[in-house]
Length: 262
Image (cartoon, rainbow, N blue to C red; front, side, top):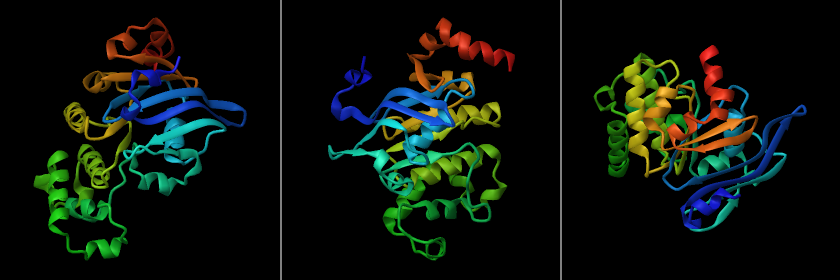
């Protein structure tokens, strides 16, 4: 049964239907159906090898499906087939991805990192000598406040803690005004306090952006979970609220039980 019926057409930002992707005969993604709503915060869990990274690669154009459709529903009502677009074109549509390891400009200040990320078509050199407009300054201040790094604006990014670097990179993506934000294991390597603050940050973005969070840390998932999608062998095994998913016998068997033995 199609889950798209759960949404009004205007509420969908992404529809993935009957998608399959194989590598050397191994089906990393197997007849996958997935729907993401406008402004929705979705968490994706699943054991290693479930297809989570390939799933994100397909959405961002790093790899292409063997079959199936990935449809991006634009805010103007027009639909786009993501499989026909290159990676940079998908990024320009407002689909941004944050990888597990933070990618920041270590030798530049926190403020400069945000300036370099503003959604302008400029080189790094031009960006650094660019005089921000009033609108730019307001946007930068809003981002710094959102990621709670306003007091560290003049600090070199390389001196930030691991958690702060993660928040800065999320801020750099926010400066690009993404419509869809894909976040890969944001809590990895964080202290408990940093993990909690990261959860608060992602929750604060709900409704402003459509967010997909891939994560292993179940306590973190519990903190931010609205709707959880469980991937297993490249297919959606279960979708629902956190407790519904966490208490499902099949999910326990393939994922939660396995976690206890890792």
